[in-house]
Each structure stands twice: as C-alpha cells, then as structure tokens.
Image (tube, rainbow over all chains, first blue to last red; front, side, top):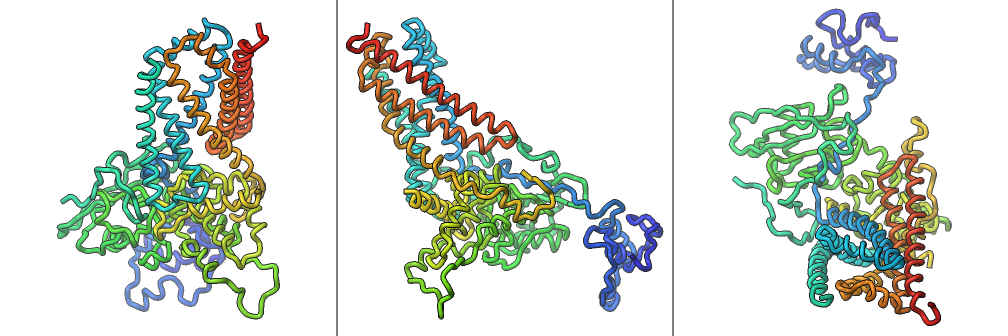
Length: 205
Length: 289
Length: 133
C-alpha cells in the first residue's frame, strides 16, 4: 500500500518531530486524512515538489502542524454528524412571517373558542341554571379579558384569512401589496375589535 | 457614528433589497438553542483583535464550525477595517480571510450577484454577500450560514438535498411530439410568461428562509424548486404538464406552502416564488374544475 | 424519514412518491373559509346585540328558525374548517408515530363537537316550535 511510510508508527504523530512532505503525502494517499480512498497516487508533481522548486519548502514545524491537523488514527472516513444551522433562532421576524404565525396562533385560539361555543349551546339546551353558570364565567373580569383577546384573535384571523383568499386568486403578490395588505389587516383588526366592544356597550346596554 | 439605519415607523417594503430593520425585535422570542440538536448549538467563540492602524472599524460576528474538531459551532468576532476592504459583505469576508483568519471558509465566485455561491444569512435575513452593502447593516454584523441547512464548514452549507429536490421536478423540456425541423415555436407573449422565473440563480436563499421548509424540508419542495417547477409548467413548449402536476399534487411537496412569503421578501434577484406557487395552485384548481 | 442510509439524495427527495392528492383538503379549507366569513360576522353581530340578554332572550332568539339554521350552518362550516386547519398544524409540527393518532382524535373530536352543537341547537329550536309542548 503506502510506499516509503511505516504505518506501524502512530499516524497522528509520526515517530519523529519533523515529518517530511513525502510522509504527509503518503498519509494522505493512504486515506488517513479522510480525503480519498487508501491507495497511493503516483502524482507527477507530488506534494512539496512545487514548493521545493520555488525555493520555499515548508518548514518541518509547518509540515508537522499539517500532519497533526489532517491525519487521524481512527477510521478517517467516519464523518461527524454535521450541525444544523440556526433557523428560527436567528432569522429576523418580518411582516411576512409574523402575520403568518399570528394567523396560525389565532386559528388555534379560535378552535378553543369553538369548543366554548358548543359548551354555551349545550348549557342553553340544558336549562337556565347551566346557562347562568356559563354566562357568569364569561361575565367575570377574567372572562371579559379573555373575551376581548378572543375578539381580537377572531378579527385578525378573519382579515388575515380574507388576505389569504385574495392570494389564492393570484393577486397581491408584489412586495408593495404584501406590505400594504399586511398593515391593513393589523389596522382593520384593531379597529374592528374596538368597534365591536364599544358597539356592544351601546347596543347591548 | 451611527451607521445603522433603524426605521422607527413601520414602512411599506417595495423591493426585496430593502434591508429589514425592525427596532422592535430582531429574533423570534424563542430560547437561543430552541429546536437545535445539542451538537448544533452555537457557542461563544474568540474575538480577534482589530488591526492597529485601522480608524473605521466594524465588528462582524461570524458563525464558525470546524468539522475536524469535536467542538460545537461558535460565533467569532472580527474587527474589520472598513477602509481596507470593499463596500460589500463579501469584501469584508475576503479581507478577514486574507488578513486575520485564513481558515474561514465560504463559497464565492462571481462577486456580482449572478452565480448564487455566496448566499448566507446576514443580519438575520438570507441574501448574497456580494450584493449586500456593509453600510446598510447594524453593528455588529451577524453572519450565519443559510438557515436550516446542514453545515460542512463555517459558512458552507450542504446543498445536496436542495439540489436533489430540484432534480426531482425534472427541470428540462419534456416533449412527446417529434422534433420539428427547426425550433419549437413560441410566441413572444408566451415567452414573456417565463419572465420572472427563468432568472433564478438557485442560490436557495428563499428555501432556507421558509419556516415550512425548516420543519418539513425532507418532503416539502420549497420555493426554489417550486418556482422552477412553475417555470416548466408555464413553458408552452413543454408537453408533460399532466405528469408535472401529478408529481406536485401532494400534501407535502406542494401543499406545505402556507403563503408565509418569506421567500419573496428575501429573494436577492427580486423574483417572486410565492406568486409562482400560487400559480401552480391555481393550475391545480383549473384541472379539477 | 430515512429508511436506508445508503439511498441517494434523489431517492430520499422522492421519498414514497407523490400522493397525487392534496387538492381536496386545500379546496375544502377555502370553501369553508368563504362560508365562515358571513356566518361568523352574523354571529358576532348577534353576540353584540344580545350582551345583556338573559336566558329567556337567548331561547327566544334561537327558536327563530332562521337563527337556528344559521347557527347549524355556522357549526358545520366552523368545525370542518377547524378540523382541516388543525390537521395541517399537526402535520407541520408532529413527525413521530403519534401524528396519526392526534389527527384522528382531532377529526373525530370536531365531528363530535359539531354534532353536539347541532343537537343542542335543534333541541332549543324545536322546544318552541308549533306543536311542541
């Protein structure tokens, strides 16, 4: 296999402190750096030849450094599991992604609201006592806070949903339209929430 | 001197090259290591000293990963002499490699925004390093590899899977009718339908910016492959429309797209993958009704 | 979802091949959404108008056939849209074997809740209609 290099010696640190470029080349050829199949290459211009011809041969300490860094004793072909680059941990929130996740979060909140709707209907069907219990829970101050947040979630999901339906007709995809539409959705949701609550104070009494 | 241009009021972005600069929050409120396997968590790296004679210096925090060591990826801080390098982020990276740390690895070629090699995450958004002005960025400039990819070394991501997804959509002309004597005819207005899609340089900024691809990238094709899929669906000379649509109609391959639109926001060539995907979905409606 | 480590990148990208379906789900989500726009706005208006109403007012309102019909349509569209939407969310974030269990549970749960709501509405509505005691 490798010619001119005694593989019985420890490959990661050659027996002497000053390995030659030839020995490094043989280690590379033997696959000990994990770069190639273990077979020597009869290169026309082996590692170190050009440097020597130019009169700038690498010093023995530099070759030793390269040797230490490149050559491994264990199976050099064993590749370490590659790390995953950070994604949501570092990606900048933009109107696009923020409104999208808001649409999803509000959708999930509305699912909970759908359950409450059914509970309310069943309470109504069960009689005045059950109905009064549900009404009481909703009328409590924590119930009102939740209802307010829920109203905002509803209008945000409604306006966001309409924006999605517009996109499904393949309209409004220029960045300018995306951004204008996005801010309109936010503004409309706030406006509708406030209007609904003020309205309920006047209309409902 | 305040080089960063923070925008206090929300604004209407008109082109993707406008740098995103929300003063409110620069990252989603998740723990720093959230969702990253233990071997991927980024640790603090070393700070390299500023060159002695430099007057205009800017800090660059750069993601580093050494596959030959057993250490986790880390964030090194370089003090870049802005008077000694060109105006683009790529110039700064080359300056760092030439003068400070020659082991810094990154892909680059054309330095003019056409080859797509130097795609990376700069200050939180994906873009080409060679077309991003340093003066548009905050201090410190944060440079990460393309988001959500497997990393070979430093800023070099493994694009094998993305290229395999591209290959899967068969990005070549499928013809069933025999070759004409001359070219396959196409009207100018038919050729114009390819504008905005054929120009893709496959830098994969868009696919790496898509949260849906982060979570389901093994099965979801992502904006880059889907934009190219649309390019071939829209080509009037192609005769395999049926097979292409069949291959795309899948709850994951196409329909993991929830129109998040990070892709259109981040395309360094100003293309619109979100719109291309909407066109594919419209074609799906057309063939069912 | 790697079955074999030695598979080529292309084979891994292809996976099990295209399901050749997915349009129906996407379309149903849009149709139910379109139905929900007027129905939810109607319901919101009803809530605003009846905030001070007591039990009697509630029963009187739901005994109106139109109100009962709209409420049932709302429940159908709402739970269909909810089931589809939640299924997409689960598919996005859950990748282990429990995914199918959760999806089935959510779908059945939505069906059950819709049925419960419809039965409750009908119960209230019929209790006031001509002929009912």
